[in-house]
Figure 1 (spheres, rainbow, N blue to C red):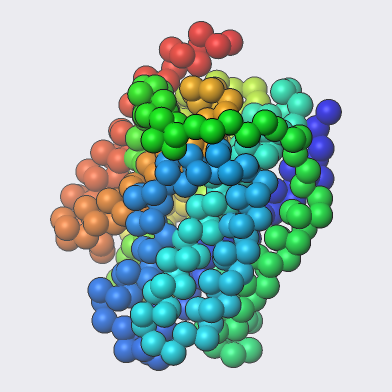
Figure 2 (spheres, rainbow, N blue to C red):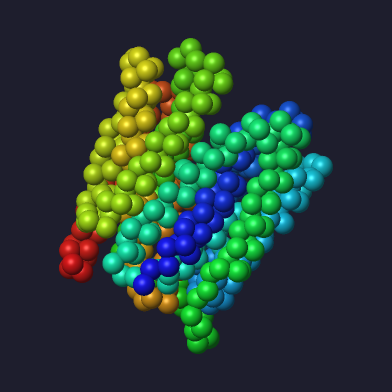
Length: 387
């Protein structure tokens, strides 16, 4: 029997955790003004969670598999709450960056353990749907912050936003402690290194992580530089910010659609189709000679269709995990691939001077999508064998 209230609470927890991703871009101008942030420090604060995920996603998952998923989730929310509150009182750059790194640790703890807890709360017939819906936590959480941040900042600047995010995480810790119950399990002493080897030696979790990395590289290519393109095209900064938030919402809508479709559609097909359409739309977004309205519409279409990819990937983790006990480790590896894509994608676009739109950017968007599509095709055969 599926415990839908528990599933809904866990999905809400992912959205709250994603506040830590969405809050920095909107507050970055205020942070730069208060602390005199140079570009390097601003990039470090912005990318801290992605870099941490790229370095330690699988390791965090392995720790969670040993310590227990519910316990790790509680520690994750508590860490986010303390770190975000601490960051709100930071008086200079170093404490702010350290608080940001701690937020990243809490964020990883939440996202590598939640899928396992969702599986424990669902009947087999509902697992694809539940995991697909869970996959929308990043765009939905980011959109909530993008739309709600102006009201929070009006209270007491960026510090009020940090404190509100801390309060939300603390409330989630209380709710998880009160309402998320998991069956007792025997604790078996295992080597974390051995758990990691077991996942890394299995070819399909690695392929899933690489394919997801291609998606996140393309996604950051869409949302990371869209404001620059819109301003260059004549839009005001306020219009560009609103338009960017709408694109994020399109992506969130795509994940919801994908979450529903994944219960009836092969996962590899959703992943492949989403990658192809996202690549084409993203390529059009970067063509400099086209009207900016057309480019923006193509970017929104790319975000919408690409949103099916996270739903397909998250629903695939239980299928490709080498063993049920390695679900969080496998999820951590997928998060690691995602985070590497988030770091590498914008760096490559910047290295080729394509941030304002160029044919090089179009080629890169097609290349990122091709990585995701190739991963989907490789995953087709093992999925077909399971049906």
